[in-house]
Length: 175
Image 1 (cartoon, helix red, strand yellow):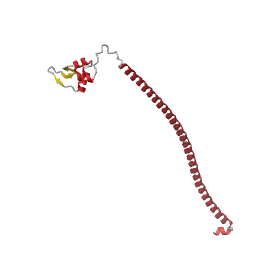
Image 2: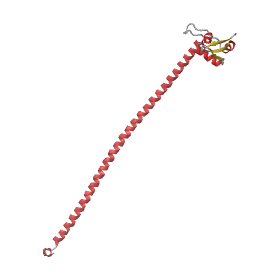
Image 3: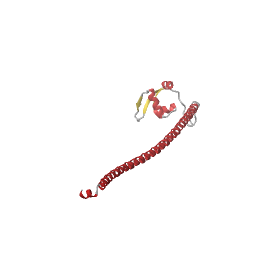
Image 4: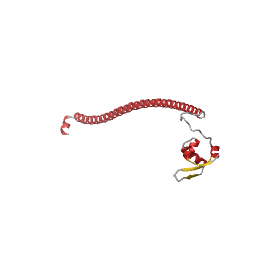
């Protein structure tokens, strides 16, 4: 085979690929390049080196046709993607199951907390009632003590009067 100076588009046509793919190929093979007077870059192609590194592809007449090598690859890819989608669905199902279990647990905890709050409110009401009764008893005890003091004073005054009355009349007049 021969050696030629070719632009990327010419190289792409001969290899049956785009000019960008030809440029990438030239970079991978480290082909010598040179800028021409027309501003286009040309690469020095040794066809034996290119043939050794790749098999030339024919340009496709119809872009939708698939070769025998591509068909199984696409089917394997689709099968792998379907399997991955199924595993993702299973993961989502496990996540939803865990979510519902956690939601039920949280609801149970919320109900238990509500019961405890109601019980605490009832106990708080009972404590308030007991404190009110203690305050009433304390007020009653103070009143009772005040009544007892007044009763004691009245009793002492009445005893003094009784003692005075027991004295003979003439001593009462003098005294």
